[in-house]
Image (cartoon, rainbow, N blue to C red; front, side):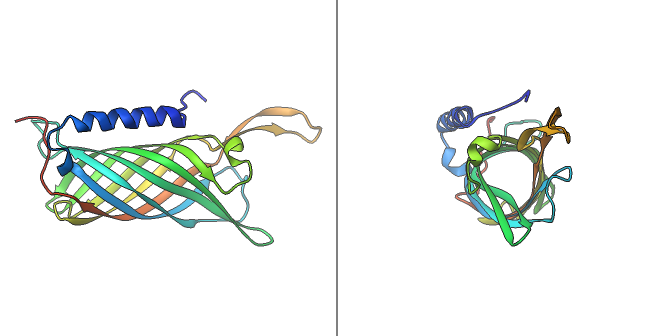
Length: 212
């Protein structure tokens, strides 16, 4: 895999971001609590049979700032959250596969109407636990997803958001084997997909800007 971020690297990146925020004199006004549900499944090349989506959850904090003087309404938003994904298979019974990630999301946010904003960016995640036996040694620890979302009533204390996260990195790397037992190539499969909806509670509504 050409691009891989392990959990230790993620912790270092998130810690650096937190230190930078502490140097802002009004850091408290850009913090919001967020939480909601995910409708999840995985894209695959016929590896999983009888797959069904499952409902999981996410929970964390977001930080927003307005860094562009010529684009005063364009904001950058960073989120740190506990984020559970997975899928379900119907075999002899229902089997649920849960994957818990520490996720760091970076979004560009722009209002298209007074109470509606669109946002896009990346979600970078590190696998921290799973209910699959030996799952932390079987599944890849890194995940990156493209994010496209919409937010409503962002200027109010309680506001709402929804988004789609399209996973780019495979969860599994394994060998393809023919009928004679020969290795015929590498397979990179299972990519996360999630549709999320949630509520955000702004601790204050004051905008933080990096310019006067």
